[in-house]
Length: 193
Length: 430
Image (cartoon, rainbow over all chains, first blue to last red; front, side, top):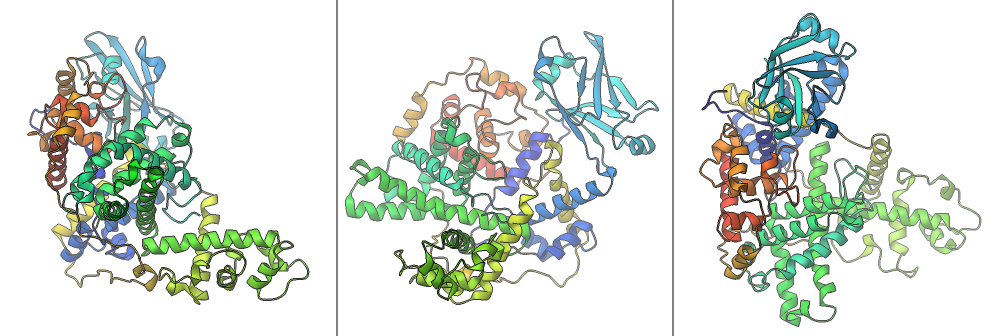
């Protein structure tokens, strides 16, 4: 990671969301009809300048947009397995002792393996063959990214024919130590084009 | 009662109200009451109240009352109470209304909170404030969830109708003992079990004319005047309007049925929860790049009488005002910090210097930054590095601890924190 390159961590995003959602305006009301918001979300009719200003000035309308955006994503996810937008996992309490040589996402679809020894670790991402979205991912080979609990990139790449992706461990500290310091969590997600 | 998006309309509210009352009294005991009574100084007292009440709530967090579920969506009483306290901060008008009610009572009785029974009176003032606030919050929640306009007064009207249905159902079930009243509701003398009593299974089956007649006859049957028959203007637009009452009863019934099959609205993974931000910024970006030329489609303000009939007084938005309460500052500083000696150093090392927040807040001290997180995300969040947490509590340091760490008074820390928040809100995204 370059020194002066700004990145957005998951903590940043939470904060940004809170900033948008916690705002209140006296006498606020819905400024845009659902049809206008849905068309803007679809990209079929961008907002006019005045509508954009009205949206930005009305926290309540932003919250309505949030609701519609989440509904839209949920509908897309339900319609096909292409809706996989990521899987997350946590370090288990039992992992804290000797250190994990394997971590699994909560949905059981991905595991992270660690091989090697001090100073020379490698990390392998493995897709479970039974994952509902496995056939599509194997076919489409999207660029995948694994991040730790603080949003730092652990691994980035495409799956090979065995459904695996291997890379050098990018951090100074050993995997167990690193994950404990980085929120005890990790997530796998496709990188958006 | 459940309606789309609402969180504060079920039986659990009783416990939320009690917890808020209890913790508000604790907060009040630690505030100098004098500025609350002066119209000029009252707005500046809100941040201190919010912080102290939130602290008292966290301290009560392990109690059975706080941990109990406050609604059927899985929100605990504590979570609901905390959300409402933070909401108050964004709606200073409610706090000013509370302060002026306090001042009025003080004018009559003096420092009544020290007198016998005064605590109950003070608690009632807090209860009144939160009663209005919960309906405001839920009417906003409702609008965000279903896209239809709503107001606090309309929310109150929904609840009044829900209560009326409950009463009518109770009377119908005991029609033998309440034959005369049931007769008045049905509009005919009752001799045998009325078929309506068997047919009334949910609020959707409740006829609006029953509600009107129940309200009309309530005073005759030993109660006070019915809610649709008082002098208050609150429900004036519903008086005699069976069509509108019927529509509202049906809406409650339909949603009750719908939500019974789907207890949680969305369970979002941590990674998914903020994806809508991308949609929001894309919508703004696309409009910036190629705005539709028009015409603008801004919604007209559709406000029915029911929404206007808000009996609540709204004041001007509060202005930030200087708060240099030296006593409070000293109290804050005097509290032992009791953090590990290297806390600042480790916490500084643990923050992600390349992150957007760290960049925008680069000019602020670490305690000010932690105060920002404390305010926006709460004392405990999965995303916090371990070195930010007080080992004694497993949570971020309190505002008092942070103020002491930064060698400034609590009010100053609050001011710097709020300034940092404004900068964040105005900062461009990366």
